[in-house]
Length: 245
Ligand SMILES: Cc1cc2nc3c(=O)[nH]c(=O)nc-3n(C[C@H](O)[C@H](O)[C@H](O)COP(=O)(O)O)c2cc1C
Image 1 (cartoon, rainbow, N blue to C red):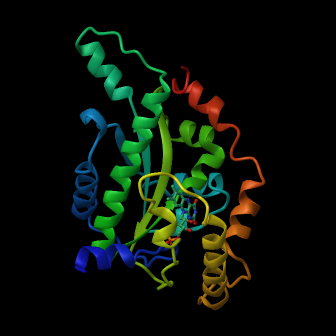
Image 2 (cartoon, rainbow, N blue to C red; image 1 turned 135 degrees about the vertical axis):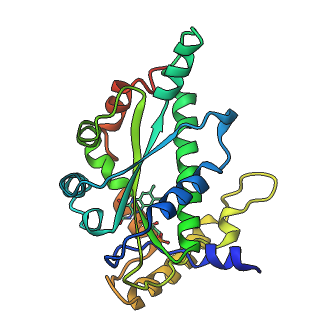
């Protein structure tokens, strides 16, 4: 359709990077692209920390479940939902900030995701590669302590960034007919669509260049969703002043 569509459709996560460093001006331009994303009520809740310390990178890789690329990528950014700045702004105006609302958690998390995705797309437009690292939430308290996060600040995910040293295939998504509904929610043909998609994904996994496996999408998802999902998150978020009401 045009270059933007081509770029978006060619996205694939990159997990192997060359040692070539990205100029700091480029990192700053990417952060600025992130900041240009829409932001709920202009609240601007995202802060990014560029982790340069090799020791901290190694610890974060361990916290993320031993994901080596957290350490080996030329750059690693941690994205925070940050309402500490808003507390300061309220204090400056002698207003008591009412925090802890679920709505604020949603807003801060959504803003952070939009910011990050803008940054990732901008990076990919420059030929850089990225992978999100939600694995940081495996030990979110450890991340929070290591990076000295105050109340009202929590790490949503990290992003590894660098020049790609691999060229993986694009992973096929669910068909548009599954994710675009007309007028009302209708799941009557969902099973057929999932079965069709299972065939496509099984073929993708069986024929891709690396990490070949015999699995469809529904199997993969079932194997993931039959387990608890980071049950420590609720207590952690409450300890940071989120999800209290
Ligand atoms: C919020 C988020 C967290 C993710 N966390 C990880 C992660 O910890 N490790 C990893 O290797 N990939 C991670 N990914 C990448 C996904 O596995 C990947 O986007 C998905 O499998 C689709 O593949 P693709 O990006 O190559 O199209 C994450 C993606 C998102 C959006």
